[in-house]
Image (tube, rainbow, N blue to C red; front, side):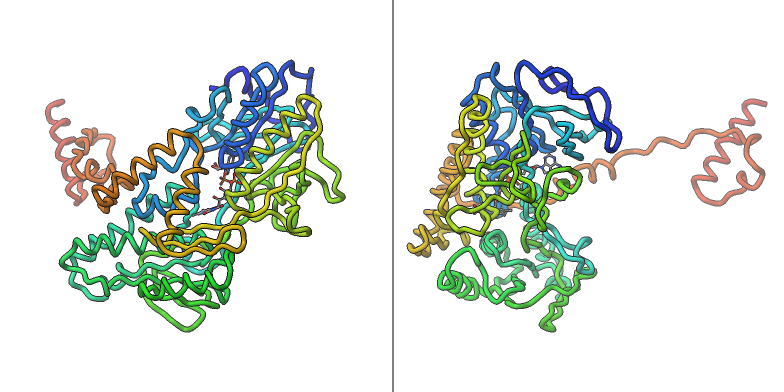
Length: 500
Ligand SMILES: Cc1cc2nc3c(=O)[nH]c(=O)nc-3n(C[C@H](O)[C@H](O)[C@H](O)COP(=O)(O)OP(=O)(O)OC[C@H]3O[C@@H](n4cnc5c(N)ncnc54)[C@H](O)[C@@H]3O)c2cc1C
């Protein structure tokens, strides 16, 4: 239930209606949309800077946790427990009100947002200051079969599903001798060769090969991993040299990589590529880029051509001529924030910027509420680190320093555990890594978590059909031939006899 700081506005405004803003609140309310990298860090920083009497902070998110996405590939590979790549809001956001629900409309002119909870009717809340940190969603294309056959790799639920699915396919393939079926089950396709795609592919492939070692019935050569990338290179985030090195490493691991190639269709798992290749695969993982959260289209905030909220370097929302929209701020994947180190460009959609922008925004909001001057967000990219499976990685630090292999893998782990929010999660992740080094990683498929009631459903005894009064039945019903109908007819006949 909403608390006093979250009291919903009495009624939803009709389209275009102006909601009276009423008396100014004693304590200004900051509503933060999205509790991800931006939302969590902004809320924590603002709470640190301002006491409860200076600002009420409300975070709105359909999930009860923030996901640290750079660790998703390791969560899918089982190197990190999936629960530890998320920071639970109720624990990490002390002194902040959390509303669980989806923002469905933003009427900034009236300072209201509509929230749609998982159960129950949508409601509206008012605010004095708005922070938009709604992130991004997978950027997909209308490819036949993709919606039915594909899965994204953007959140922890998908990472867990991918892990369980891949391990489950290996399990199932090991118990069938049908060569075509085995081939189909053991073929895994990844579409998109950016950071997320390459890390996901490399980590999952590494896990699958490790897992197959424990099966007598499956040979390593039977596993087929395929990467489809539309551009002529992978990892555009690092230098061509490092991208080329990664490509070489993946090919040495027998991963098939098709560059300048598109997925044309995958109806019923029959994959057709633009280079003429055709094969069957039960697993198609889509990691081909992101776009700003489409719910922003249901707002009166200014958006650019890519659907991102337009911002200035102070992280204020600005309209087309650069004039700040009062009381509105945005950051992260859903915002077009000018990159002051690369004039004319915007900060790329990554956690490196999102977390720093969140902190900066928390500081700037504290300044606004204390009538101090805002400062510009300025961050020089410190580089990129990628894990390519256990003890394998690539990294490019500060533009020049290029690192490969175990050292890069170690840098990846060190950097991301440092960046992972909350001490609690950092310690849990490090403890898990230590456990895995000592006891080896766990590669068991928990496929049934996706339908845990199946076994119970099969075992459950259905209730006996109720006796029906034949007098009330039309004559042909009593003659019906199905066992249930016969039982019904007999039952009701007996009931009629005993009544007479
Ligand atoms: C697999 C993967 C690997 C990555 N690896 C790296 C990496 O190595 N380095 C790096 O710098 N970046 C990496 N990134 C990118 C990075 O994770 C994102 O750029 C960053 O998380 C963006 O932060 P954000 O706050 O804008 O969005 P998010 O962190 O995605 O937060 C958005 C929040 O909004 C919530 N939300 C969505 N819709 C609604 C709604 N209607 N109402 C309310 N809330 C809503 C979501 O639940 C979520 O909590 C990776 C991303 C992925 C997917």
